Amino acid sequence: MPASILPRPAADEHIPYFGRYTALVPPGDLIAHAEAQVLELRALLSPLSAEQSRHRYAEGKWSIREVVGHLTDVERVFAYRATAFSRRDPAPLPGYDQAAWLPMGEYDDRALPDLLDEWECARRAMSALMRGMPASALGARGIASDAEISVLALLTIPVGHVAYHVQLLARDYGVGADR
Image (cartoon, rainbow, N blue to C red; front, side):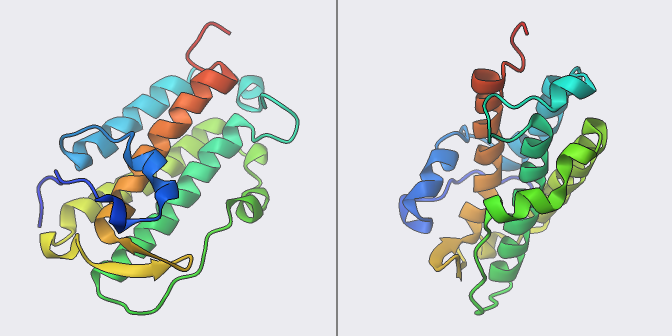
């Protein structure tokens, strides 16, 4: 069981789209980066008022609450995929349609602190999965969304995904900047 995960997935371990996320994961211990993001996201979003957390930067865009709900969905989907493929389950897994899933979460009806707590639980579960993942399983691959992907990529992408959305929260929502 790895105490840390240092390698990053090669480009052939996932579809090119996911490169936007893996590129945002800095060198070093993946588990430590994943755990540090819990404090980072809380520090960024906890100061927001209920009204601010419902902010959408444009018509049809997600609210900040919906962004957090989306992050939680991704943690769960990728953790399941990583678990299945690390156990050498040969069954292809279905796609994840974020546009279809998001409204079903009704995230704007929930308080931001509750959404952050739920995301933190999902992230801590992902971190525990990383810590308990046999090193020999990191290279295992499976099919999800009709594409081959490695366990290492499935563990890395959510960390880069959060980094990506933190950037969007600053750029598009003005979170962390003077509002």
